[in-house]
Figure 1 (cartoon, one colour):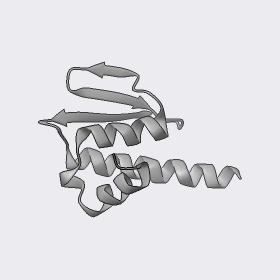
Figure 2 (cartoon, rainbow, N blue to C red):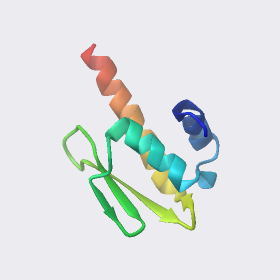
Figure 3 (cartoon, rainbow, N blue to C red):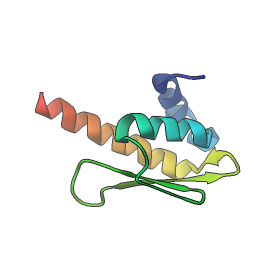
Figure 4 (cartoon, rainbow, N blue to C red):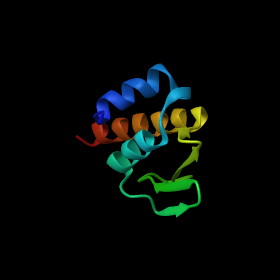
Length: 86
């Protein structure tokens, strides 16, 4: 199974061809377990104010490309905030 960094590289290179299980693995790593699992959706809480959610959806075993991009932006924001605290 691919590691987190390998999956992120794949997400950046081709967001339309990411398995939902891989995206879920990345979200669990960065944001903890999903707060809500409803049908094909999983919702994750983020540590910043505003819209504090990451929502991903399983579509025939694949993740939706726009949601992959949203997760990448959230990870980038998380890393920038973490770097600012150090």
